[in-house]
Length: 553
Image (cartoon, rainbow, N blue to C red; front, top):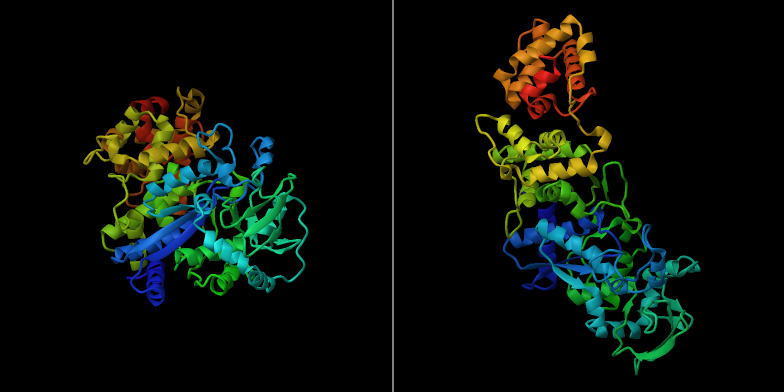
């Protein structure tokens, strides 16, 4: 059997053998903790994770490096943050205070920590690398000195992609964007290194001179400070992005790293880096696919710089880890998809449960079987799973009606299947907790289900003979049909009996209309509106005695 993960693993193994036979295979990804690390960013990690995991399943030594780009500059103050944080624009993310009220020591840790926790729950194993620690420890010192010596050659490579004069920046943030793209030209020439000011801590600096022999670098800052430092010992600065990325490819020996579509357009950092890694750093560009954006239901491309976008931690609040892994495993990297936070999550869970049944029965297609296997376990261990997989939509309906009351929830679950009753809520966790969290955080208040406290006497008194008969047939059958399957047969069967049809009669447009009319009547008498959770589930949730009371028995 083969799928996109297997095919990429084949390519990576072959490429690694060509470059460095017998050595550890290196897959890589990078994340910037400049804001919420959203579900689009998760694809940057899941793609190399799945490939590295497949390589390890084959018994080969493979490491997944995850670079935290926490030495990047703080670019802007997000909406909802005190405007006074503007004084930190230009500082490394690890030097910026965390948002107000945060328990973390700095801005980067505030956004890294939830992602670290989410990756652990997703079974993603990796070797984390803090770029702050790499740069400030001097780990890249030789690479920085080499890039400075080769600055004219780097500038020549970048010049191939300059089709027009560099636009003048309107402000410091825009200047940083230009800087990050590799356009670090100063009045004294081009320099691929940007120092952080010793006085104000920001990168609003201009290199005014550099001596290759002594490694003395002179700079001035917009704050008015200026100094000369020895780059051979100076560790408060970094290479600009278009030079930094290929330097790290060579330094780490990266064989595989995917890139977002925004990084792989003509003249992008990935294309330019492909030249710089070989011509300047004597390395080889990684292989790896472009990956498409990930959205959520009702939302297009997400941008973490704007805040308010769902993260992996948010998704794991309402769905089990294997389901979230499956969403990334089943789609090729070039295929976009959406993660559902609305009612669509119920359909998604139905699809997942159907796949699990097919896999257990040996009926799943090969690619689907592989995607499922990658979702439920890693090369090292299986992920936690719910013992009794009650449909998500049913659990959501139950906690909606019971408002999460555990005693009532267990009563209903016990009655779903009297032949094999659920006797402990632990049997339906963690799925039950995910469904409850979805109901309480994602379902609008006006869509929540509230059972009537008393019968609607006015409506009951206005019913015609046929409507009264339909309610009588339902109430008379409650005791004999008190299970999920039994109540399903009962509620769909009442209109059939009234029409003189057998229980196994096929649905016709007329029969469907009669069933819908009957359902609307029952919903209205129970919850005061014409729709709600699946009617058999609602009846179980309300309880036989209360159903009889509200339906006028």
